Image (cartoon, rainbow, N blue to C red; front, side, top):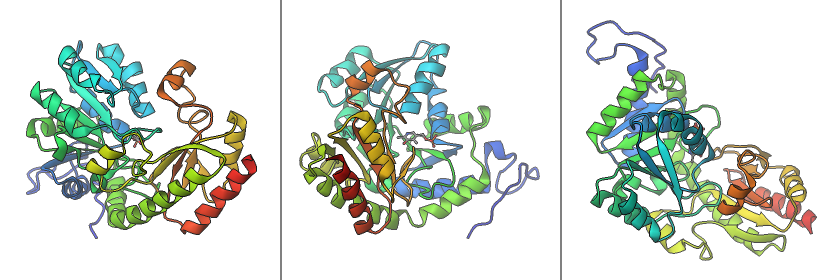
Length: 357
Ligand SMILES: *Cc1c(COP(=O)(O)O)cnc(C)c1O
């Protein structure tokens, strides 16, 4: 096991090239090399959180630039662009990238950057990454894919033509809900240099201890994902047949609207399930609260199962019109499936849903 290097500063002229931890540290470098192998790429850079990684990428833009964004991006990405970068003259346009017209929008608007996420949060919409990246590459527009819900084990955006693959390592990569982190993977050296500049110039670096924890977490990533995905696939099928459920969204189920794309670009369906219940906002909320094996909490990807009611939690600040445009209604529930015994999770869900009837 590597030691933890809490050192803030290093003796000048050391053979490893470290000088000050804001611009590099042995624990950053160890984590970077593991992440590079997971995404099968040349370079990776690590940050204090997923949001820090998003900040690093967005800070490479300049006033007047446009980011063409998938309309269902992670909420904190939306807030960062709209409430912070907007003030510096960086504009956003939100479109539905599952729509064929998105490809024409790319050519018409010629944005400085395209920002995608697949599957999206919380609806698990799947975007055709290679088709979108091909269209962007034809006109030399960099594409960022937020790969947090999959990790490089289930989906490799760079191999489908993306310029940057971004991950909140807080989620599956670390997997134990005890550290925050973010990472950018790329094969483009210029982009990597920009990310390393952002790390030190903006002070977006992680802590050596968190990198050490995340590196340790990765050792069980394949095992955890295998169990979580198997649990999720089984629970998605069970949920789909329950009379209290309106619909289920799970990328590897045949009734998912982009099922064909999902099975083409993902190795498995992931461990998030989103359902719409036959109930009011209050009933949906109390159903979530009554679960025993699912803590009601934001975040996802840890070994413990979590449940989230987007309307009152992650998307509480989103106005009603945007929520209804995105399809986030009051009876939506997002499950992050953990590594528990499947029968425990299954019985827990059945009992909670039976109360709804
Ligand atoms: C959690 C998350 C982020 C932000 O990451 P933090 O580590 O919480 O800053 C970004 N994108 C997605 C898809 C996420 O789930």
